[in-house]
Amino acid sequence: MNIQIINGPNLNLLGKRETSIYGSESFEDFLETLRKRFPSLSLHYYQSNVEGEIVNKLHEVGFSFDGIVLNAGAYTHTSVAIHDAIGGIKTPVVEVHISNVYAREEFRHKSLITSKCAGMLTGFGMEGYALALTFLMGRK
Ligand code: DQA
Image 1 (tube, rainbow, N blue to C red):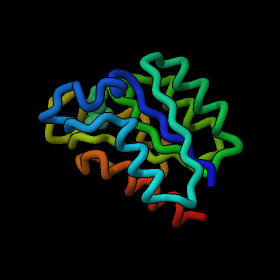
Image 2: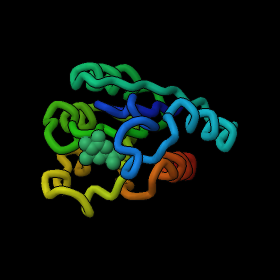
Image 3: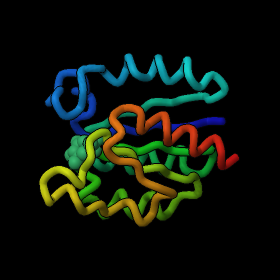
Image 4: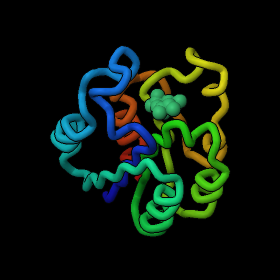
């Protein structure tokens, strides 16, 4: 199965950024663990701080891949373009947030993308990505 993981803005700083909220592991290190834990999956990773590039990546993989795991970062709360892109593709998207967005500022309580996603995981730390992969494998 081909699975695309997409991380949005500021998530390139994982391991360095607000470590009390997001932990001290870089995503690159965690990705190695994921590849060992899910050897049957072909895991593709993309990170961008640019909204339109995330839209482009969703279009690129969204008609051929088996699943997408998306942490859209702050664009979750603002992006009609990402909402529309998810709605326009065929591949199921699982929304992931490392922190529990409902335990944080009110502006994080609203997601513009959940309604177009297969499901949403929030507050499970990096493990949320693994839970999303387990869900996508079970759908096949
Ligand atoms: C986040 C939560 C968002 O509110 C925030 O803007 C992020 C990361 C998370 O993974 O918890 O950048 O998506």
